[in-house]
Length: 435
Ligand SMILES: *Cc1c(COP(=O)(O)O)cnc(C)c1O
Image 1: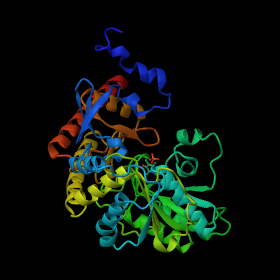
Image 2: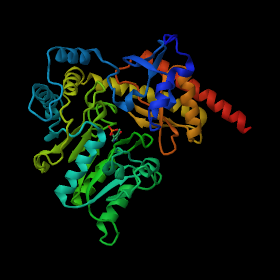
Image 3: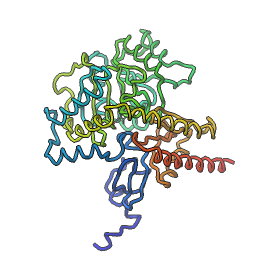
Image 4: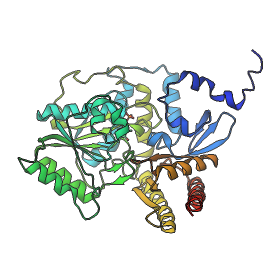
């Protein structure tokens, strides 16, 4: 047992390689052992800092370990606050619900009840689908191309990605897949196709319980649905007796500037799913918001042991209090969103639409490099220079940029410089090999 203090590079990942399943994923892109995190930065064990523009896939919108949330949590723990509460009435949940009502729902005149499902996005989606089917008595759901809704079986049926779907090892049914906004080019309004299918008793599409939609498709490649399309889809759904479920798990909580990503379109979804950044601290927590008139659940019908993560309630309450009582966070997201857009448009213009295009909305943006290979090179190069980001899209061809919403413009600029340099060097070398 000597030399334990100086593990060589090769042994650095020994325990992960030996004991952790091959299913691990993000770790493969970033081969270092991380030790600490603060704000927009992750620190490796040896102290090397990395700018984090992956941010737990938008689970850390307020950055790593935001101080206001950390102190609220530390105080709660120090006072022997309840950690696990099933769904018992408790003060942590009470304070969260009060704050959520006061700061989020009431100002927007949204009359939702709140369901606490199991603490993952997928479980929130499962609950939403079950409830929609129960209310309408219809088994079918309409979901869209390139949609991502999680990887448990019900959610996976709504997810488009073939790789994830194949892992189910069984038929994924009960879903009709339709083209998302822009899927067939800008000349085709795919909402008209939805309307036609649902209006034609001989279309072969069963009347759906719900239409489930993301306003911006995160994993699907940062495809943005237009506000007119969203309104039209919602109106069509309602006209055909179907509910509207907005999956706001990635695009919500300020990522596209407003608290809910559907506010811009003026939607009033029947059901909203939330997870990722709702706790604000990276703690597991999910919500299903249900139009009060549609709360047809019976007690315990969608049960679960971890529906009362009180630590998450404490940080979620602190996040709402600190970041959402005024419009200043949304305003700064709007500003930094413009900055990201102009920077990405500039890169896209430099290379032309066949090689690079800019995608996304708010601070949920990316660069489409038209090839998973190229995007992979860019991600590896950026990582070598201290920036962490990941790919999205059907072929992993879109480099996804999700900086914390609270990032300063200097750090944002530095990260974007690293990204642009990586794109320049990779695209220069691909031209050389092609020539
Ligand atoms: C991440 C995500 C989910 C799944 O959430 P998990 O917590 O990973 O189960 C569902 N929908 C959207 C839009 C997501 O981005």
